[in-house]
Image (cartoon, rainbow, N blue to C red; front, side, top):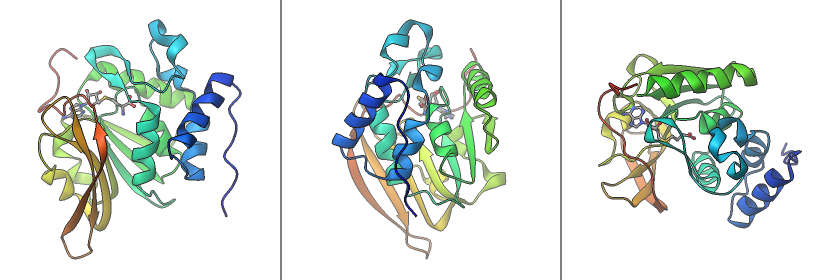
Amino acid sequence: MARRPQTPADPRHVRLMETLREQGVSDPAVLSAIATTPRDLFTPELFQERAFEDQALPIACGQTISQPYIVGLMTQALKIERRSRVLEIGTGSGYQTTILSKLARLVYSVERYRTLLSAAEARFRELGLTNVVTRFGDGGQGWPEQAPFDRIMVTAAAPDDPRTLLAQLKPKGIMVAPVGRGPVQNLNRYVGDGEGGFTMETLTEVRFVPLLEGVAKES
Ligand code: SAH
């Protein structure tokens, strides 16, 4: 049974929710997950007054917290079910992770910067999330010990179709990933056909930081 999306207390957050709806984020469960996730908690001190703008913002280690509309679009495109086990590549601030955790049974999130991962883990504890597991490592390799996954979300731009990750998806699984080598990439959705193959469609153009190989030394 679909419930009405909840209304946030902060008026800036209410306006942000209106913006997302206007742009086509319509899934009530996705809207509720975003409405109950305080983006200011994930935003650096310096950008607090912009925490509820529909824009990507800088975080530590030269990375970014994703634009809320893109978070909404990608989460909606993933068609998460309550029983889904979801792999996320690029924990970053943990904002997208938190939204996934409100929709899925379990979220596995991989990050290549220790600093970012520790800060995100502290936020998960503060929010009392009990269904998020994290790993410091190269997300390009996925999480083979926990595969296969029902859903995979990649929040850094892969240079080509991420085949290693596709191989960790269930036969009828769904993966959403930005793919491309330039500053603008294609946001692709891959849907398993149940027989080992996939159909791919491009949803829109996006600007993500690159998916880099290995773990960060400076982390
Ligand atoms: N979903 C995040 C967005 C973070 S930006 C949020 O909402 O805040 C993308 C993140 O992917 C960065 O933190 C970056 O360090 C991470 N990343 C890039 N390449 C990676 C890799 N190979 N493995 C794991 N994380 C990676």
